[in-house]
Length: 424
Ligand code: NIG
Ligand code: FE
Image 1 (cartoon, rainbow, N blue to C red):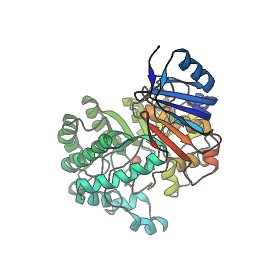
Image 2 (cartoon, protein in one colour; image 1 turned 180 degrees about the vertical axis):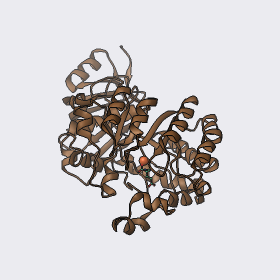
Image 3 (cartoon, rainbow, N blue to C red; image 1 turned 90 degrees about the vertical axis):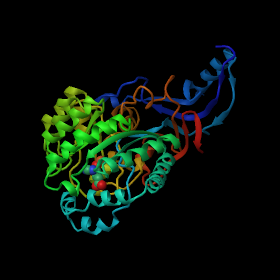
Image 4 (cartoon, rainbow, N blue to C red; image 1 turned 60 degrees about the vertical axis):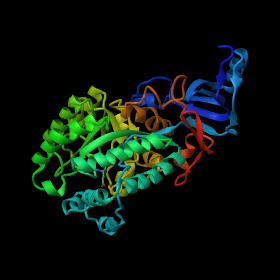
């Protein structure tokens, strides 16, 4: 309307590629149907996209309505996509685990290292010992890297505290970062990431501790939106996972499950049964498990960096998930100090192309709208469209296929987060 103003006009976009408008994930074969506009522009007001399309049309409309343009910035012909969303990370933790690299490379299995008190438990010791300031500084550094790589929203799990006090500490750090950093965070309580040493051999008692003391307090302090469980042989069984996630639902926490990563335990079936928002990993998921996900609209969050880094031959069956089960596949780094120490979602895109045989269009959808849906944000982010948050990534690449093709580098040229230029 006449007299209104636009805070920022992003002009001279060589090619704008986005999932089509909508606040829902894109299912199966629909994932390849992305919208492409050449010579495009995006108009932003108060952090929100108000108009986008071919630049000539955008300008005509703004002129016609007498809209004042406060600031204009040129993408100089580059590729522009929605800000990437990383829906599964273990962002906040102490220390690192390069001392386990030679064990890993000599073939000692991931779960054996954990059973020997290393792995996740090694990071638990480091996380408990670290001050809140140390955890904050380390996680901030990782978040900076993610932003420089074009990521504008990140999910962050707890799960290296494994006691009320230390789980709260991890979640507070994530909340603090959400408040101070341009990247938005969505927090997940994952007290059931491993059984702490104090409860060794008494998993059921630890589950009761989670249910009776951790969940109520996490919820009371409003520190998490989701609850996740490592449902795996020797970690948490299907009945234990079900108990935790059903209790979590009573507090309004949405269920996520590290499901069928190593053993086909029935985590995918459970995800479907309880209507989880997402199921993660799924390398070993059964056909029945995939059918269960499809029947309940659970989003499979695939983490090809993890199988790559653990040297596994097996990969999640992304092609079947997309082509046969019509599932809304999402991708994520799983950034963590053990199974996947990388912040690079662009490396994950390359691995999704190489090992999951996903197309560049499917990969974009999986890293934007479907990733947003996996953390309950598809109504606000994940596509470039009017009324969504102005989270925009500008890439030094001629087209989408160039991202998984030219690998191992960061293609990000600029990032606009909630309407502000934060990387350029
Ligand atoms: O998603 N699988 C369990 N949790 C993480 C790894 C955590 C760690 O090794 O520190 C994962 O792979
Ligand atoms: Fe994980």
